[in-house]
Length: 145
Picture 1 (cartoon, rainbow, N blue to C red):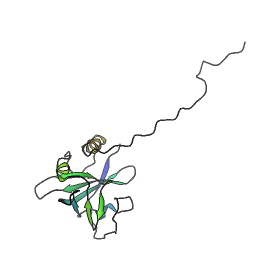
Picture 2 (picture 1 turned 90 degrees about the vertical axis):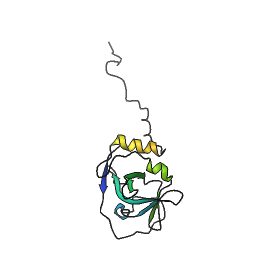
Picture 3 (picture 1 turned 45 degrees about the vertical axis):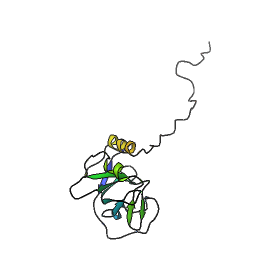
Picture 4 (picture 1 turned 30 degrees about the vertical axis):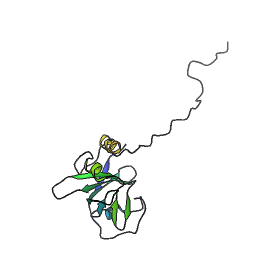
């Protein structure tokens, strides 16, 4: 798990896309984009993008859901950029019910985990360490007399 840095600078440049949000897309291009749920209902506007500290990969977006409402975090991995807008494959109700951690600061590993669970996304578990024979334990050597 890791925390995230926030990008809040909007860019006027639009890169063509149409697939999943990937690392080759400048996350600043997401700021200010309209966001829609899986049914095509408008959720709001992308307010901030959160990057993984270790990899720099965009992982979460904070969507401003209305003038007097809070931002809702949505995962970027299953989301798509289509015709200049972000399409999130979840229902609007689920998105609006996402845990509220406030915006403008890092997400803690616990907060990130809560968001993954909220959206029913599986976290990849690290592969088990392979069994290795590192030799004998100290003090168990055969002693010749």
